Image 1 (cartoon, one colour):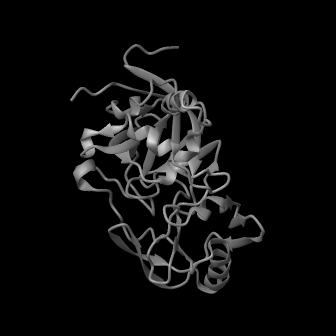
Image 2 (cartoon, rainbow, N blue to C red):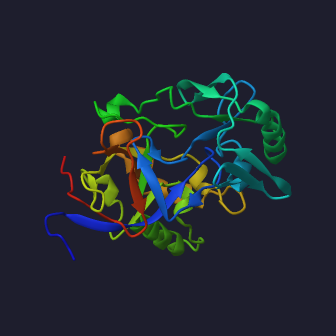
Image 3 (tube, rainbow, N blue to C red):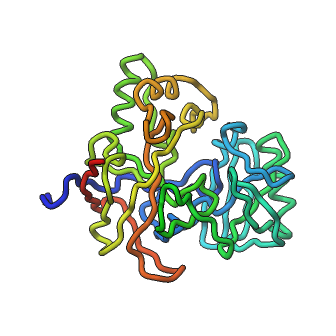
Length: 295
């Protein structure tokens, strides 16, 4: 039933977690939501020998590393290699790691560090190591965009969540079809939450997205997600292209970020009870609703 007290209403159509930053995602039926985002999202990160993070921007083969979360293990798959299995709790000493401008104290994997490094280096054909986020080391989103709201994040580029309307992907595919280019799916944009029932890019314009089955919990879209070459990388083959980037440059220049190209909105979580362990459950089909913001 439509609730006329809201300007827009929709449903959670897809939920994605990306346990290892910039590697393939996992589509899930439900997920625990905390202030940091979805459970296990960007909990691990691939770095070089100096602790600098690696991404598909420079290492597109990362798209072919497919994580799997088990009861007590992280398993990584890559074509032509035996799977790498690591305990979820694998933890060694502290080491410095960089995510963009943020330098954080992460954990290495102790006795598992060397096999993980050998496996990743073989997959990516470069020196690569795996680090794990230390939840005791807070990493906050930019105050410029979140204000005084509490918005901690793990190894994500900068914000707890990325929200995308399915209609935005559908509109893009209509434009691609007009240019005789193949359709793409939401994986190109690496969202955590894909919402059906909204107009294309309503996530840009809504003030809050209320999770109607999670009383009092809402998402606040806070910063347009600026886009790099990753949407042009085929997630199934890791082959870079140009069609998606060229097309969205024609209609997604965003004055809120000095004309950069944007697609989707970074978001933070509001309304959870106090305490680091506070969570809510998100699941497919869950209703969301909000009111449009008129700046």
